[in-house]
Length: 162
Image (tube, helix red, strand yellow):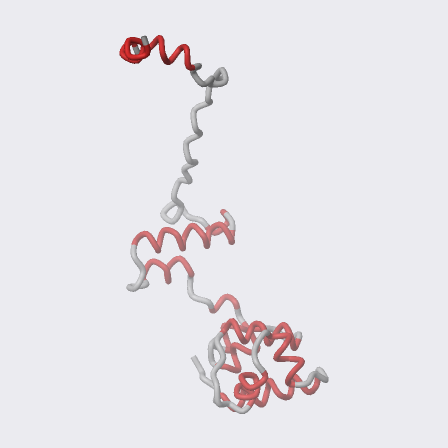
């Protein structure tokens, strides 16, 4: 992955901001960051996260991928050629940091986004529906016992009262 220097990202952001005729304050507000932080990014002093770059891209109305490439987060050839992206399911399968449960969840999430076109028999797990709760019979409303019923049910109390 080629990493471009951060000042290049900052200069690019400043150029895009100025061509959009936005002040530093306006773009910072649109991106949800502070003015000083955006200024530090533009001067190459801070390295923004992918999330911040995405917010800045929205404010500038440019693609987030172009900012990712400038920041060295994304390789330029991957941004230009989606076929160059490694197989996601293979990457999940060989990642040593993930637990088996995390792998299964990631595969399920990925397949839910790409649909069944990408599935193969070895990557597809049967989806189980949670069991439906049994239907509850219509019960008569529960009544509180009256004092006379309670007294009749406990003979000891009746003897003490007499």
